[in-house]
Image (cartoon, rainbow, N blue to C red; front, top):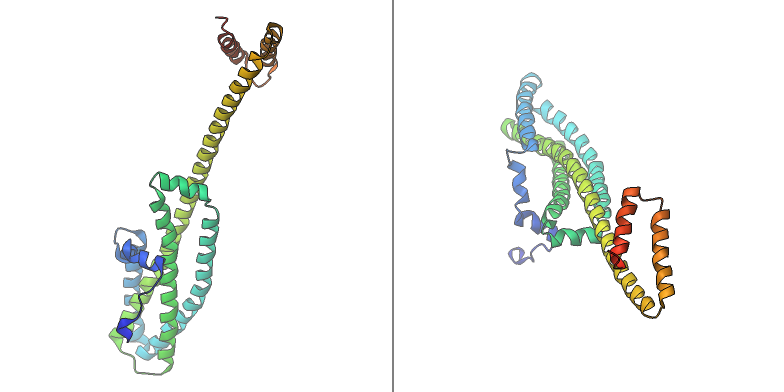
Length: 255
């Protein structure tokens, strides 16, 4: 029976409700909702004027044509959203994800990725409703004023919300790119420090073995070689050379 149907097994779809992502559709504190409300109210005024001048049936036919074209455009826009998500996820490496999880900031990244699914889901809904509406219009039923205006209000609201929400996603993607770049640099710096630390252990161990097996003459030659390398290194300033010489003297217990 239909009431015993298995629940939808879609992690992202379930996450929309678990994270209350759907509430963004009517969060008046966001730009997209405010823009959608304003444009939708304007659409009611324009629709009312159009109906008074040209009649309800002419209005419905005009709206059907407009939304049919919008539906076609949204199909291409859905592909653009999918491509954007693919590029974004492709730029995020496993190291970055692990870095964010360790610092408990992965939820922010997941929220942005989930927004792509959310907007794609809304686009799919509007496309389907648009095509179904076109079929109903072609049946040539007598149009009802209130239902027609309400339908246009909801469709305009959803369309404007999708447009502005997508613009917001572009800004989020720029932020994610900047954050991932910083994280990548931090990871590289940490890896470089770890490599330097390992090299210091390796050098100390190697030095310890060599010096234990060497005589005093070789020991002096080793000290002079370090002194020579310090003085000939073009990467360091004179002040740095002086500091390195002091390090060398402490190393050989000459201070």
